[in-house]
Length: 217
Ligand SMILES: N[C@@H](CCC(=O)N[C@@H](CS)C(=O)NCC(=O)O)C(=O)O
Image (cartoon, rainbow, N blue to C red):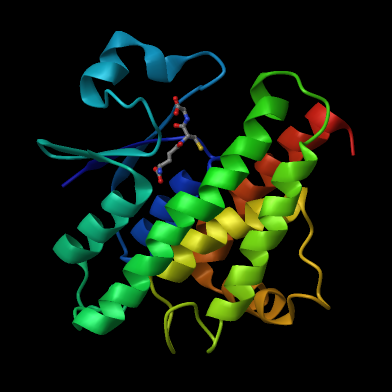
């Protein structure tokens, strides 16, 4: 079985999917880099597959699915050997789902709103109000961290999806160790995981470079 993943290395949701593929031991994946500035994602061929023109987009045989959270839950539901990444127990699953929706609606939303004007519209600095919203999001995450991981005592999809976004937000608004000690320890724990080293770190490095080139620091 060969999967096809349309992705962009710098994109946090694409890194989430790659981390989950790694964690599930799915390596037989054709990776296709989508050049967003060149508008590859707006070409007819891509739109036929995903009219919402977002990466990541995954093809599994005759099945096409996009949105990182939909992709990773599909992958675990279909291919995981156990349910630790996405527990079946309804209350535990609800907590993971809450964090996944928080990633979509709060974390990634503010990251995208902050980053895109600089990356694609040639703005030279980030909007102050967006930077404040990132701080507000950090405050939530600090409160969510009541154990080692974001949704209980073991790594779940909540950690994988949120860490790709939070490690990227950290590039724009560095996480203050004094204000957010739990986030700093959690980030450290995540960065020690094999899936993070293999599938978040390389793209995150490119993300950092991309901003250096745009705002020069
Ligand atoms: N909620 C989506 C967000 C995906 C997303 O916005 N991806 C960006 C790249 S980071 C993208 O495809 N942008 C191009 C576009 O929206 O046209 C997910 O988790 O997959």
